[in-house]
Image (cartoon, rainbow, N blue to C red; front, side, top):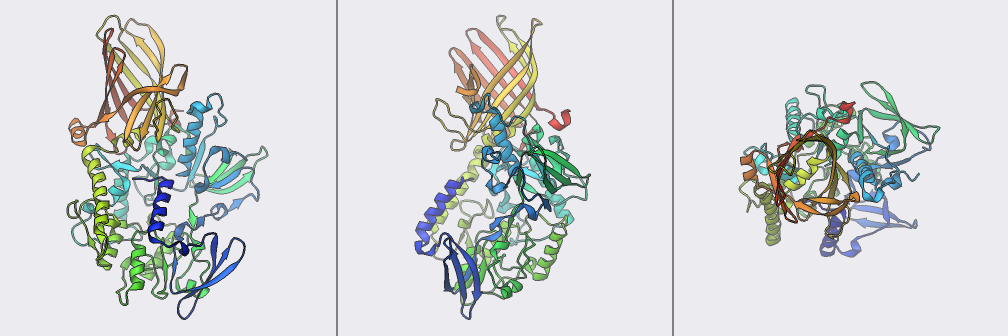
Length: 626
């Protein structure tokens, strides 16, 4: 459901081969200027040798959109030393810690690598980043949503985020229409409530006041980051979040730098900064800079407005005053290209008149953005489902609801067909979509992924061992356990995995006879996307960071069975020589989060007959434990 970059590239290559002649492409060129002529456009391009070429076109389509170029650091931070002691990179360019130190997506990405550096067997005895942490400065609280979220309030089944957000059945009866712009107080409150139900609370349990969502005004519209790991890195203290804006970066005498932060709670400085990653977003100004001044004026171009540089219509693709010009990616909405093609091909077609795209409305919205209004949403043009339905009506497309019910299931461009479309191919895509949707809602697909994500971090453990044999003592253990994220490691099984934790626990075991011993245990937890499988592995006795062999795979109950049990559950078995280990897991989700969970191991063999029950409860955040 969430392809890797190389998979997207493979798809684009296949699409290009099938649909776009090779001679249409000009690599290593950039547009210098575009000028209007009596019949179209004269476009000047320049290659990487400096040679310029002028060509005439009937139409001009600009597809660089909001992601034209990373927004420079000095556009956000007013005072930056001309040459900083440390390396600075945009969040889109961060790849490896080694590159960063060689001289909120971003915070989680760095923390993931710091965690791997500390807990990978490759780095045993060599931990150059042992005392490092991520300091994240954010101007407002944000919700971190993972890619898989609960279907409903029973929290026993999970859907990919896109399938949940764009569900037709969520819309009220009648024609489906889009909406955009500022939020009303009621809508803003409703979104805050829905998101907090989704994540399991107001985030105060993470121990970071900067992320706690106020219960009343003033509070901003909801801001969301897509991340599976960020909340638990915050809880553990590896990501240290502060509210404010960085206003100055200056050099320190020791080779590091100092950040000055302006905050409503009082300004402060951060010393000993070893690197700077700036998640400042992108600047769309480059997408229009080559247009002539008169066209920019007609588009009411405002380069300083990062979120709305142009005043457009037609679902943000056009201006009626420049009909042979079109934009794709202001915002990025599927079917924009389809709408543009039909607009240019049709002799006569009624152009849309949308209340939320009236120029006066958009200009007021732009002003509210510049004033940092609390009622401007993160994505002001964010009603994807509504826009797709409106475009479909405009293009006279029919929606294919089969095999879903009427107005049921997530939308996809493949569900909207015009005369002459390849119906067989479109239906095959929709059937694939339905198969995923059905396997999630009825068979528990991705529950393993959601569970794996929710395990990350630190736990208090309480364990009872109830032995039915006098030769094997009973006892009670109290201690702590942690699931540390790291990059997947190889082992002799040859299997590949996408996600991995090193699990470590330590506690005091008090045996029935009154003696007490310190007990330690390590496992490796792994998740495979292709198999949608969560598994637990033993570690080697001589190296407790290295995988040895499989303990067991977790088999999750179907959603209907889990609902009857009141929580997600799983079972597993492992035969160790003559001893059979039967394990039961219980995962009572609260939104996407686990506040507690339990495991029950029942062991039977020639010299063993006992039950071991372990209760896990969330450890206090690092910030609240001091």
